[in-house]
Amino acid sequence: MERVVVRVADPVVVRMFGLLRDLRIERGEPTCTEVSVAEEGTVASEVAAGLGLPLDRIEAVFCNHSARGLDHVVMPGDRVAFVPHGTPGPWRMLLGIRSAGEGCAPGE
Image (cartoon, rainbow, N blue to C red; front, side, top):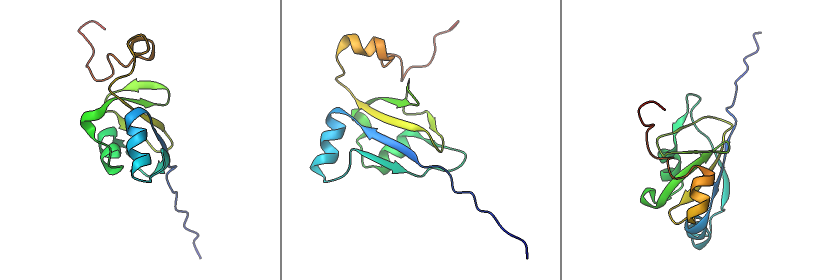
């Protein structure tokens, strides 16, 4: 008899901060959770929508410690954090949030 091994994709660990965290608490939902994504990945905006997060309130997505936009593809096993608008000025530059949702300028 042939043995069949089914690989289950690693879950994505997702955290919410600021008002996104508050929203989850108000709903009685955890502020840190695990979600499953397709093996080929899922766009961060779809992950956020699946968690009921308002996309217009998300300024950046941290994926594996790097600031990204909502169009970033989240892969199985990634660690993701959704950050709302309103992060204080100096931290925006330090964390790379300012340009997370923008494309690279020519020559970069």
